[in-house]
Image (cartoon, rainbow, N blue to C red; front, side):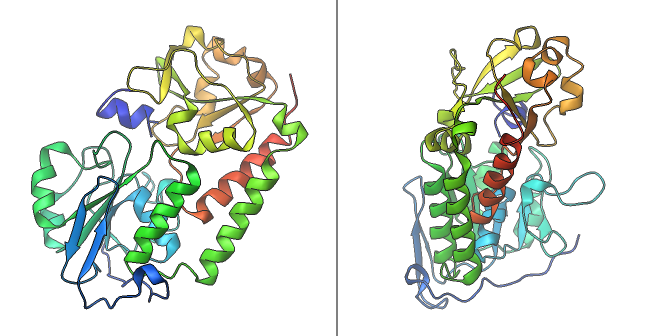
Amino acid sequence: MAVGLGLVFALAACGSGTETAPVASGSPAASSSAAGPWAFTDDRGKKIERPERPVRVVAQVGAAAALWDFGVRPVAVFGPHKLKDGTRDPQVGNVDITKVESIGNVWDEFNVEKYISLQPDLLVSGMYTGDTLWYVPEKSTSTIEQVAPTLGVRLVGRSLPEIIGKYGEVAAALGADLNASEVTAAKARFDAAAKALVTPETRNLKILVMSGGPETMWVVNPDDHADVRYFKELGLDVVVPDKVDEAGFWETLSWENADTYEADVILVDARTQSMRIDEMKKKPTFAKLPAVKAGQVYAWHAEERYSYQGYADVLEKLLADLVKAKKL
């Protein structure tokens, strides 16, 4: 995995807003009054302390989307949330982009002046590499951290349910009610989808998960992608690359070596920065793959929000795709 633009493309591959307060809390983790002292220890081991529970939360879109599903309403987001036609980027989930401020929509775009003007209480972002906050530009980190505390959620080295649970913990600390009917119904749906995903037929399929660029394709290393790791943990037969890149996450291959791994099904990164499936089919070696010829190529939502709603959708859609496929 590369850094900078390469990281964006390969790894995670790569309006006027109004403030809405978090929902009222009914959970033990957030039972203290918003007017009292507030503390939270994040996945960096950093203890964050505020005189009151944070209300003006700014979040990277992945974190914002997860928190939104748990009931927290950020005042601003950064990272991919608006497509060229003005519609919502899938990465932002259910966040109403007409009701949040935007301080950046692409990699290395973070409007520090606007961030300061919003008078945030807290910034929340996921972390893929070390303690680096996703989409927070390194050149501006010191300034950003002087404005408000930052909270990091680690997105590697743990299971998918653990990450979802961590975002739930953050949301509860910010005032969300984890016993709200929307949350409990979503968890029940997630659990049911996970249980239904693996059947004798789907278990028998060899599945390759990948992303693509003009000159390169990347094969997912399941251990470094919580969702793909979870598919494997549930019992799906996911390709594990032989030569993972030094930084992890992927094996990088040239398109000439697209046939390195046999697969009955190919799941392709559906983010805007990844090459589209129809573009990949113009690569002769990719077009000749049995799964491609059989039409068994489906979308993989590589940066889905870590919420029960988000991954219930993913698991249900994956099952719908896999039941259409056959062993080749």
